[in-house]
Structures are given as C-alpha cells and as structure tokens.
Image (cartoon, one colour):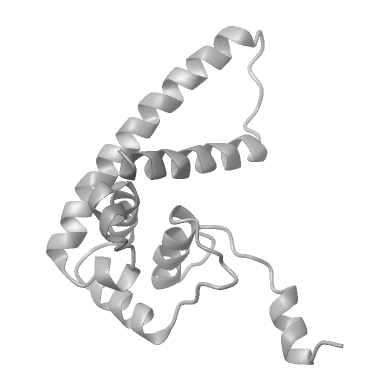
Length: 152
C-alpha cells in the first residue's frame, strides 16, 4: 500500500504547457514539453526557479519561451548536450540568441503547417471546428520539427 504522500503525487494531474499563471512555471513547463522531458521526473527546483526569476526581470515570458524553442532547435546544443534551462537563462546574450532561433523555428513550423493544412483542405470538402486532438498533434509535430532541426 502506498503512503498518503505517494498517493498525492501519483494522483496529481500532469500540467499542460502554459496552464499556470506563474510566469516562472509557464516557462519551466514549456521547457519540459518542448524538450520532451518527463513532467513527473523533471522538477522546478530552487536553482531553476531562481534562474528563471532573474531572467524574467529582464525578459518577458514570450521571449523566454522563444529561447527555449531556439535551444530545442539548436544543433550546437544537441552536439554538446547542453539543454539545461538554468544554462539557457544565465545570460541575456544566450536568451536573445536562442529567441532569434526560436522565431526562425516558429516561422518554419508555420510554413510547414500551412503546407500541410493546404493539402488537408484540398482533401476535405467541409471545414471542421478546431479539434483539441488536432491541436495536440500540431504541438507534437512542432516538437518533432525542433528535434529534426537540431539533428541537421
């Protein structure tokens, strides 16, 4: 039989990316999702929280999320296995560099998604309302695109 504390941890729902109102947690959850880390094993510890809080005094949440995506798409980070969140937000120069790469990754993903949508629209006669499963699939495709970009 599991202890009460273990049951609480086991029963806790896995948060969706961006579901929190805490900006530190939003960036952390985005990093966990984009990097494909296990939400149950990867924790927002004191070091990560303080590094993110410091970065958020200079940069907004969107810029940090772009930087996370840029890091995910980076072949250099893949080659050096340098994907730690605290490393990314340690210097403004890194945040700015990877935010630029994140914008490029988003643009590429939008172009690929537009091409895919155009193909799907030609196959479908009727437009269907937004589907949460399709939205989740689009997020997964974006994460896969970032992984492909870093393996180039």
